[in-house]
Amino acid sequence: MVKKTESNFPPEKKVIRGAWTAEEDRKLAEYVKIHGDKKWRSLPANAGLNRCGKSCRLRWMNYLRPGIKRGNISEDEEDLIIRLHNLIGNRWSLIAGRLPGRTDNEIKNHWNIHLSKKSLTMNELNLKLNHKVETNVDCPSPSSSAISAPDMNWAYPDLKLEVGLDDSLFESEKPWSGPPGKDLGLEIDGFLEFSGGSNEFGMGDNNSYQMEEEGTFQDCLNEKLQESNGGFVLDREMMDSELDFDSLVRLLDHENDDSFHSFCLEYIT
DNA sequence: AACTCATCCAACCGCCTTCCA
DNA sequence: TTGGAAGGCGGTTGGATGAGT
Image 1 (cartoon, helix red, strand yellow):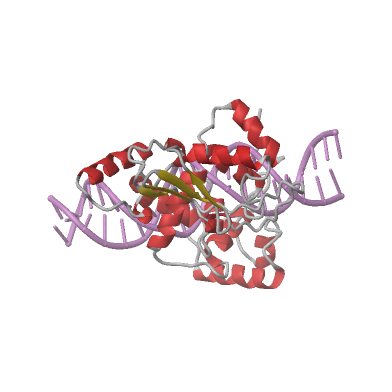
Image 2 (cartoon, chains in turn green, yellow, purple; image 1 turned 180 degrees about the horizontal axis):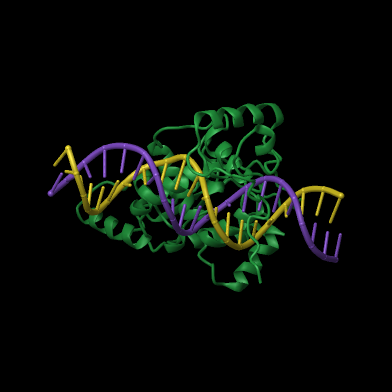
């Protein structure tokens, strides 16, 4: 059987590969400016380029498109990338969507080169925390720690820690289209604060949740789910349903728990 | 100066999803 | 409902560049 490849962007005759020249960039930018960034298949011929449509699209999306931010990725951006990656994994386009001006390719490269080495597992983080507690050092700053919620195993619940979620992560362009009544209106602050004997999980400006007994992050959320009787999952206006479900499952560390999957899906669908 | 090695990042590749006739 | 076209995504590659010897 002949494997079908590149059916969507078949190679035009005498296709050039490799680095783009300034002249090619100019032609592409000029063409897209007039005709828009669609119809990539026919674009090369129309624009006078000996490139495949796919290559043109990539060049435009990653380099020529207006608003592309070039230059070093800031610490804040890095922090956001790490936290998003811990939350949703290698979904670069989703991550890029939260970083204006950055492309998925750029973030992917940056992650592979710089951040993948920095990212810590929760166990590694706990080891560091344990050391810090023993030596009376201040709590870790959120920006310096990549925290993976599913791996939570709090060795020192009196430490104040940021879990790695905040409102800005979920500023989705997609409006929530789920059923009414399931629009639960909860903003996930993303802060799990352990201080003293009580655990507070910040649920947004109007919805702070206190838990008297000692417990874990997932205890807090589970209890909130129960007491709200269907009135709480995540902020539907902020997230698309796929991310919502993934996030919740990952947050609650129930990735292999079928009954919990069903439970979540009842809210989401 | 010449060579090797490591790093970076633009570009490529193949697969998957969505769209539409 | 179906199949091809188009668009999108994530993994990988390879050339350019800089540091080290």
